[in-house]
Image (tube, rainbow, N blue to C red; front, side, top):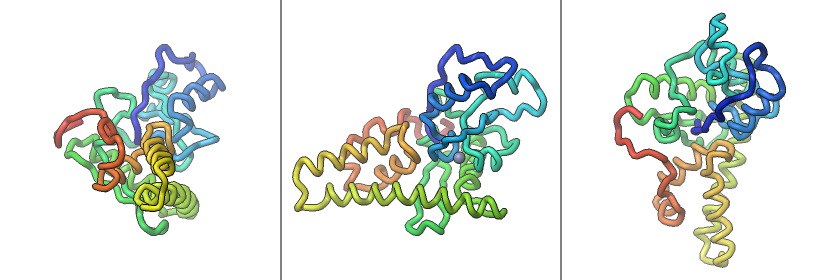
Length: 223
Ligand SMILES: [Zn+2]
C-alpha cells in the first residue's frame, strides 16, 4: 500500500463513475497500480473505499473511488475501517511491513506495525490480497501475483549484488543505487516491499538515501 494525493476537484462522477475520464484520472492518481497490492493494472476496477451498500452519496462520490485490480476488489468485498492511502496524515507504508518470501509459493509476510484497528484490519486484508488461495481463481491469480512480485525481487537482489561486488565500477554501483531508489518510489510496482527490504538491510541502508523513505515520524502509536 502506498500514499497518493487525490486531485481536487475530481472529474464528474455524479451519475456514472465508469466514464473514461474518471478511470483515467484514477489510473493517473494511483500510478497505474492497484491501491491494495500495488500490482500494475491495465483493466482497473473502480473500488469504493467505504462500501456504498446502495447509498448513492457514497457510490457516486469522487473521494470514495479507488483504483483496484479484480483480485483485490473481490477479496476486499465490504471490508471497512481501513487505513486510507489518500489521508496525508497517515503513512500507510510505515504502518504495515511487507516482505517477499524467498520462494514464490510461500506466503508474503505482512506485519502490522501498530495496534490501531485500522492498521490491524488493513494488515489482515493485505494478507488476504497477497496470499488467499481458497478458490480456484484465487489460487491462479495468487500464483501470477507472486511471480510478478518475485521477478521484481530478483531485480532488487541483482542491484544489491552489483553495489556489493568489489569488481563493479563506480558507475555500475551508482546505477544500481539509482535503480533501488527508483524501486522505493511510490510510483514503482510493489514499492512498499522495497522500502522495507532496504530498511531491514544494514548494508543497503548505509548505501542509499533512506531518510524520507517513510514520510512521517510517528513512533509505535496510531498513524
Ligand atoms: Zn490488487
